[in-house]
Every structure is written in C-alpha cells, then in structure tokens.
Image 1: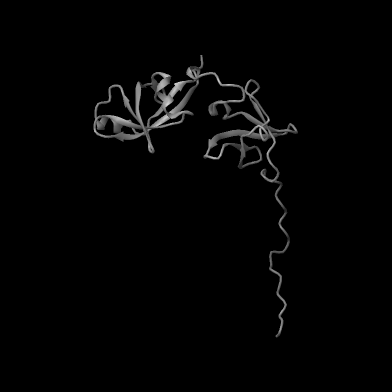
Image 2: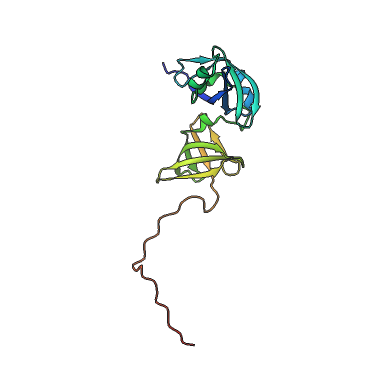
Amino acid sequence: MDAPKRICLGVITGAHGIRGAVRIKSYTQVPRDIENFGPLGDADGAKMFELRVESDTPKGLIARIAGVEDRNGAEALKGTELYVVRGALPVEDEDEYYYADLVGLAVEGTDGNKLGVVKSMNNFGAGEVMEIELDAGGSVMIPFTKSVVPLVDLAAGRIVADPPPGLMPGPKKEASGSRKRPKRKKTTR
C-alpha cells in the first residue's frame, strides 16, 4: 500500500526570541492558514508539530510549537519543512490546482506533440509560472494562464500548453563555414 501523498506547507526558518518561538515561511495562499491544518509533520512524518501562529512579520510568521520551550529547542528545528497529508487540504475550486498535483504531469502542445513534463510551479510576484523540462533538453518557463495553458487534465495526467511565439527554443542553426570577420575597406580622407 502506498503512503499517502504529503504536501509541504512551510518551513521553519529559525528561532525568534528566547522563549521557544520559531519563524515560519508559509507556502499557503493565506500565510496564517498554516495553523489550520492540524498537526504538521516533518519530511518523513516521524515528528509531528502542533503550532499556533502568534504574529506576522516581514520575515515570516512567528509561531509557538507545543513542547518547544526555549531558544535551543527552536534553533534545533531550523530548516524543518512542515508537511500535511494531501487529503487534509480543502478541495480546489474549478480551475484551481495545488502546485504539487501539477509537478510531474506530461505537457503537450495544442498540436498533440509532447513537449516535456512540469518541473516546477512558481510565483515570483507577477503571476504563476510553469517550468517545463523539455524532452528535447533544457527547460522553459511559460505563464500559467488560461490562454497559454488551456487544459489541465489531472485524471489523465496531462497538460495542454500553447506557449507564446518565440518562447520555445527552435531548431539549432547550422554553423556557417567561415567564422572570420569581413575586412573593412580602408578609406582615405
């Protein structure tokens, strides 16, 4: 029996103060919602953490974790990723997807030719971007918009993409026979 799929919701980035509080970088759409998923586990599920968010800061959330009472305990958790079982997440609305469900899906063009697989999903502040690891080698990033990605079929494990012109790498050009620069004609004044 396969283990349930786990989704990373955040990471502990360090200690805050001397009484055991931690800083957390949350990956949830609303950062404070990370506390609403019940106990979160580490990467392999061996340790569970009950957390309570106390405040927001520019450096992330400040939270308390049950059983962590001092700075040493908080510092020992630095770098710990916080996971939840996929089934604990709310059902997405139509045309909404969890990044973790998209990574690894096959990507094909509107002509049916396979382009590659989804390598990662990102949002750098100007909208969502899908990185495709191309079958032909290399990778390309395309906007994750309805016009560029008209179909996401999770059940079939595929995505149809229509990348904007010039975004996809074209065939490599043949090298010209001569690499010498043309000589300039001398002119006299």
